[in-house]
Image (cartoon, rainbow, N blue to C red; front, side, top):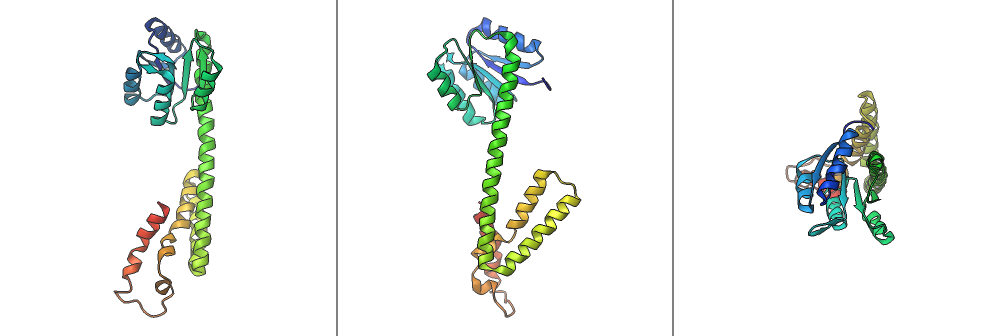
Length: 229
């Protein structure tokens, strides 16, 4: 186990909740304990929590519905549900809703650290896959905008490619992190994107610009912001 992680337990059985709390503290975790859904939500909103362990049968609340609500508020939070029922339909619904694990009570206390660490690792893998997919979608969208830019004005597209090359070289010279290098490269690709919304007669004007002619040009950064948004 690496580092001291913060676990929140929601269990209406006071004795059992304290047993789980003592066991996890023994294994080196910081452990919060709540006895109701309301108490659990309050604790979660006021403390950094790495893993939530909750009973399904809570007073005045359903633990599964509580988990779904918490996952809406904290989508990166690994959630482990506990129940005395080994119900396949319940397990399937819990896992489909984003719950990381489902434990059948009584849970052997020696199994708790392994369950906590596996839940954290599953959520990390899930988030990594999601981020990779999202980044690929963003890059595809930006490349489509670049194609649209080239179709509208080849000179602007050529200039943009040059800026991207300079930005990537500069990012390497600065030894930026891979994530920062990607952000800088994408920003360079998008720096002229507002010109997609500029009239051709403005972009291709050969004669000297007058103050009146400049009015549409002042809007191009706003247009670019709207396109990216």
